[in-house]
Length: 407
Image (cartoon, rainbow, N blue to C red):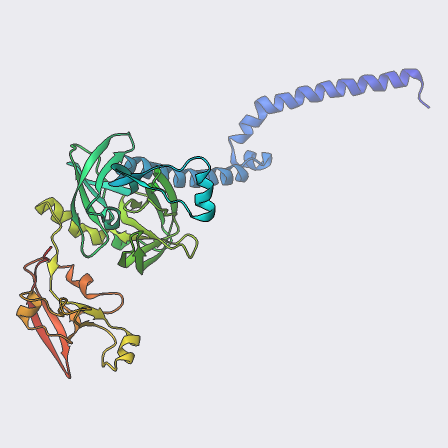
């Protein structure tokens, strides 16, 4: 057993050791460790090398991705507008008191018109500036009602009355004009260069209420054929559409689809409600001819052939015992007022006849991916094109000089 003196001596030794160890640790942390960290072997000894580098790399990747999206949105947002649709409608008396229950439960009461008409906002969409002097691109179905009035609202709160300069007969786009100068113009990109998997950003007037709403996703498909319907029962066939999982909601129609450089590569136009995250946009390259013609002529100028037709496929060819399962077969409309070949049209002047099958336009085969109207739209009025035509058992080439499409 230890006596009292031994225990006292041991306690002193422990206390002194702790004090010395504390001073040594502090000295190492403040003076020795910084010197070791300046050398590679010192970093390895201290174990401060690899983990920090890995963490920093992850932070850089995350910051770069988010920064590109933020900068793209900042760049384009001043050019994005909400398109407001206003129409004069008859106002109705409101049902109040007990009658409101009778109306809902038994249908014995209906709202009565008061004979007065009021202007009301009945819908909306999105658009973006394509000309500093007030030109704005949107979807045709957004401004389809010729009896309605239109205005545009910028993100800074400025509002302008808008005039529809033209509704495209080929693609679902239209051009508006407002009385304004020195507007911020959205930069137009190249939709032919997009790739599946690349990041895209959609900006629009979501649900016709939340202006300049931003969603991000990827290009999930290209060259899609889409039939887009509107609330009025009309529909548009969109060839070569861009498919994306970036959320496109009601009201987004006409807004820009952007790449990370902040360039417009598409016009948001449709959403598929039967599947999640299925939105579609018109490739901006399809709208470039519209933009150019409006800037040059003040209206949309399109080439015109002058035929009515049905696009052939395997099913139609088999059902009608046709030799070709592709091409555009020239046919009369539903009644006699809709002839297969329009009188005095370029097609009639060139000798196109009913039941002819147009197989190619300047060597481009007409199939599900390339319709007749799509191929004709690549040219300008005055251009001469060569059509490969099947007539009964003969195949011939016919030259046609295109004219400007009639209103």
